[in-house]
Amino acid sequence: MGKKNRNVAIVGIGQTEYSSHKEYQNQPEMINEAVRAALKDANLTLDDIDCVVHGNMELFECVHQPDLWHVLGTGAFGKPQFRITTGGTTGATIVCAADNLVASGMYDVVMAIGFEKLQEAGSTTAGITNMADALWYRHLQTGALTSAEANLTIDEFGAERARRAAIKHRIMMDKNATINPRAHRRFGLEYEQAEDLMKTSPPLVGELRLIHMCSQSDGACVMIFAAEEKAKAISSKPVWVRDHIAVHKEEMVANNYAYERPETSHHTAARKLFARNGITDPVEYFDVFEMYDPSTWWGMDWIREFLLLEGDAHIRMVENGDLNIDGKLPLNPSGGVTSSNPIGATAMARVAEAALQLRGDAGPHQIKKEVRHGLASGFGGTMWTVLVMLEKDLDWQEVN
Image (cartoon, rainbow, N blue to C red; front, side):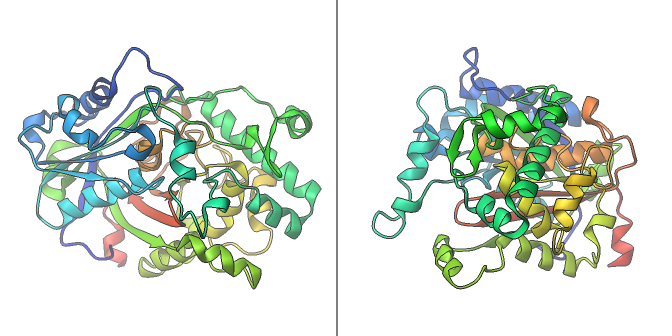
């Protein structure tokens, strides 16, 4: 994204609770719950919305062009609308698209909608295992169900340390989820259970166990974006979208592992985004990081990639509690993706939750210290990374 034509702020946020099933709602009804919440949060009506951006993983739900049916719940009838699907990054891509549409001057107020509701006919596993090239990659395509990161971490740091750090990371996420009333999985785990969980949680693939893995969730997230002049009139505490970046790596990058470990899309995104914004120490600069963590092993390794750390610094941050909700850089105060995973909304929820922290409106899982600078990520598809920077104030412009 880089330099914008005009500043854009998040002025409204609405989320449903995330759960395994929502039998009492169909898709438009579930979306409408979040739409109403976002409009109420922004003190707006549908008449104030210039454009709607809508997205989910329709491949997983077996409903073609769902945005047409969902007009009943989105309120998009008679308005310009864009439909976006980019895999697990869908929610973050929607955020970037909405921000771009406002920053460009095309629209003043844009409502972004991300959701997933799989219980009627959806099958994430079926969708993932049939989307890869049947000749070249299908036999390896397992989506997020992989032990690759676990194997690499164990090779680098030893089995005992790696496994203990991974389970501590997972318990930390559950502790955050337990105080988030919207989170799907809230087990009430304690650190004293680490030894038992490492032994008794059902194995999935290699070192990956069920406790490490995200679930499938139903739910919707809606965000409203506005240009600076309107944002200041609409909201007493707008959250500014400073910058965002998307980086892609082809899935066959896996072949490179036979020679050397390539730079990940996460590291590339962080390196470029921070460089152009003058961020030299992301751990010191950011006050909260809502990271897309589809499994504990991936999440733990990605701390190093996103924060541009070296050696075992990321492991030490987990071990020392630096990423706890009351730590140096709180990671996923919401509980993250291992706690709630409404696929089309998952990456958007990362941005929404970071924005709520900046506003001081996160509720029971609000960080106690002041939160001024936020970071949020999305991941999915073929090594597709989105990274978003949020600011409480506009004073960062004076530095750039």
